[in-house]
Amino acid sequence: MNPPSSSQGSAFVQSRRCLRPAKTMPTSTGGRCEPENKSKNKLILKMYRMKKLIMAMLIAVSMVPTISAQDNNRQRMTPQQRTEQRIQKLDEKLSLTDNQKNQIRNLYADFYKQKYPKEKRKEAMEKLITDITAVLTSDQQVLYKQLQEEAAAERRKHAPKN
Image 1 (cartoon, one colour):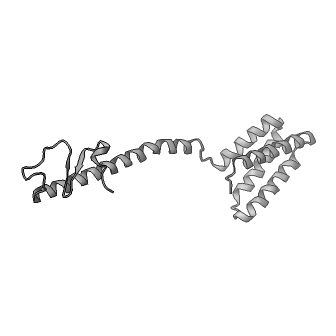
Image 2: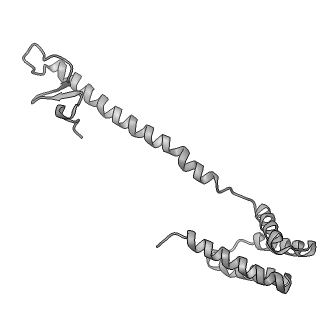
Image 3: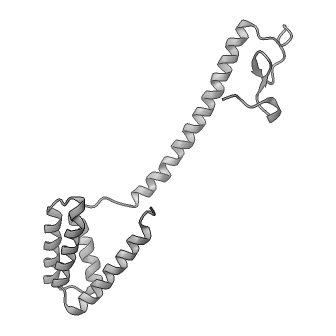
């Protein structure tokens, strides 16, 4: 990549034979590059390229905290923590009894014990939802179904577009 020309306000002046800093006076040979000046010009070009590389790296490094801050919002939880969080949300919405909480906790524990392949995970999740619904009263089942529909709509809204 060539450095910008002097008409663009560059710190370099391009002549036919060499590149020299714009603020320096022409050499005693009428502006021609001497062998020692060629090595200086190569050094100047290297420094110019290095400066651009360092600036690009600084920009990249400055963006890392922004990207990592987005990842920190999504914490990795253990299956037990996820189970307790879900039971707490269900309890807030459905007013679960202690017996229902224990039964749902056991259902989630059984679900998380097994490692499902991608193809069967959806099936297993549907079975878990069915089992949880069986534990609930009829009024709670209606509310639970609404919660499931809201969660599905939220997932569709945030799903990547293909």
